[in-house]
Image (cartoon, rainbow, N blue to C red):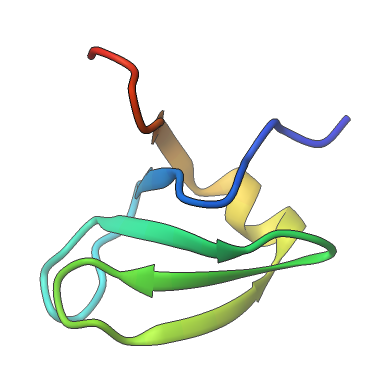
Length: 65
């Protein structure tokens, strides 16, 4: 069962990007995710299954944490 990930969500992943950031913004959702690193701005495409396994936390616009 796929997770409920939406456009504009911010994902905190388990591993850090080489720039040191752990947070990624979701730009595209489908079989693949298009993610933008919030540290350096790099955009990557990654398979949904791989991304879902590495998610630590999902932050939504308008939700209090």
